[in-house]
Length: 187
Image (tube, rainbow, N blue to C red; front, side, top):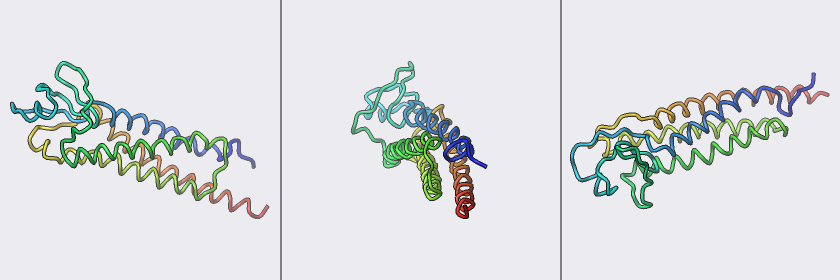
């Protein structure tokens, strides 16, 4: 019984989850609505961002009350948690792009089973990195301000779930590929 695609049709399920996770992850990390900020009257935000009416904070930008988005200055880091969120956003982008490119090639090229296991591990690491973005909610800023989930952070939660489902599904592709390779060994 032959396969229609290089790695069989089984890899198209996780491919759709990887694509959805990557798109949601990019919206979460690049969107300016990660944390909904209710700030008391103080000069902290105006000293750091030079603007008083900040409504939302993002990993790389913020949004004012009138809906205008601004990128942070290159040296504007609120805390070590904010720096961690930035670094994890970069790591998620890199690992997610690798996994997505892998799945783009999966219908054309036959991959050995250990490579499927490696990609499954990369997807788990991507899920962890996506989740570490939320460490920012335990920072001093969120102790000072009232922080709530916003649109981008909700997309980040969805992306984290999709990364994890993709990792599990990719592991099953690994098992199927390993079983299929074992079955061809006797021919």
